[in-house]
Image (cartoon, rainbow, N blue to C red; front, side, top):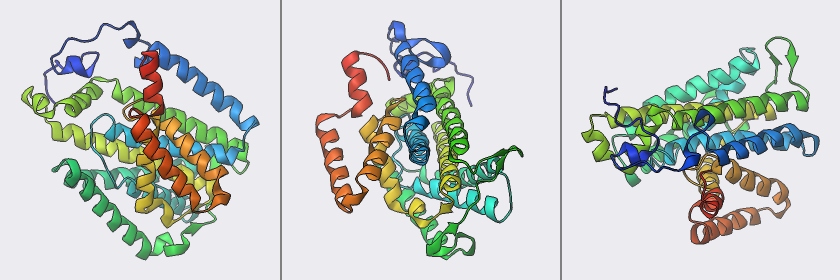
Length: 338
């Protein structure tokens, strides 16, 4: 978007003209620091071992929300744009993936890609409208647009209204791998999550990622260097919406249903909570935040409405005592980037 290469340095601080920190853990394989490589190894071991100890459907739900939170973190954590309407892309990805699998008879990989494409297209339109504003105005515009999507889903025939799309088939992957078994479906979901997670990390640690982090730190300075910041913000918005659609589409195939819950404004609030609890602007924070919230919802479900109260208490505790989130505070204590 510009021939200027001054922002392709190792850190956003250097991107803005300040000296880059000479920390030895800044460089590593694919942009991972040594601490992050260790955390990634732990994550991969967990993905391999977990289904033999925990309920696979619970793990699949956790991974879908972890990818959703990571996609949201790409926007708020690295560009500084707070969207209150990300449920629109998550939910529409689920609806279109479910419709493609059940009505059109597409295989699971194409169904998820269909949901992702629709979510990305929706993100392109909504992002083009929203990025013209910033701060609370940007947040309110995204919320209003997401509510329009919600009411569309209530009325649209293909969504099934309040009943949703039910009995969505998992289908056969690549024409010969049946996904009806939970373990087979788990490996498929784990592969999608890991691919999405690595893609987000690569985006953040690319020259493009240095620009968006520079926008977060000092947008006027970035503009003065010749970068069209609105274009970068729009592309990031589309990427975030597309990955949210992948997460929503995968979730609809896992549970065989797509409902209004996934497109409701409360879902947008949940992903904000996951990201803040885990650690805003950290690589592994959204994963930890999603694990905390999903685990709480799963194991405290018998408490009914008290789950919401407990979530609120945890959010307040994190804001007061863990301003950087769980992963952010751990990284700060260890003096490493996570």
